[in-house]
Image 1: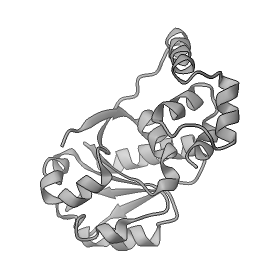
Image 2 (image 1 turned 180 degrees about the vertical axis):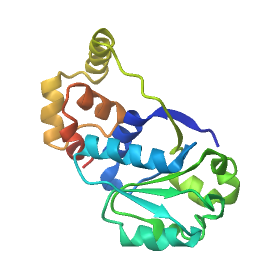
Image 3 (image 1 turned 135 degrees about the horizontal axis):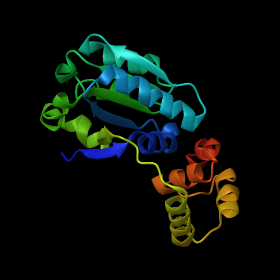
Image 4 (image 1 turned 120 degrees about the vertical axis):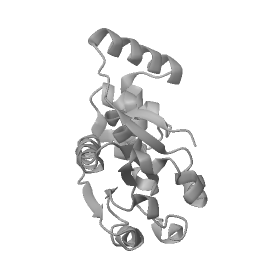
Length: 192
């Protein structure tokens, strides 16, 4: 399993784009409690919705907590016992209406694919380590926007219209583009 190092803002944008799909992401952090809170704030800012942080005190709680919160965007934080989470055994009750992110110690990610191969396969490549965000200066921002406009063959106004109509491609780069033009409020519409 290959871990992807992703900036917190980029990760929040990807979560926002997939928020209505019930997707799961797993994030490794040196301090899961702090990262869970920081990530929840970032997701809330991007999605303009409430995001809850739920501590997993006992590994067997995850399934019940996930079921009880299936219609809300949640950041689950597992510190103690993260290696014992019954992810494969509880996979059927982990299906959700809104996205969920599981933050755990980086060391617990090491054997995740071996301990929970079915869960790992189910979530695909959505296993990350959060890196510090790299902010673009104005020149880099303009260059990135020009590249996105060229790649997708549309202007900012066309993207906004397409997103509002629910026709925008479901792509993390679309989320990035919306945020770069300060229209992160449309991320929920692009995910539908």
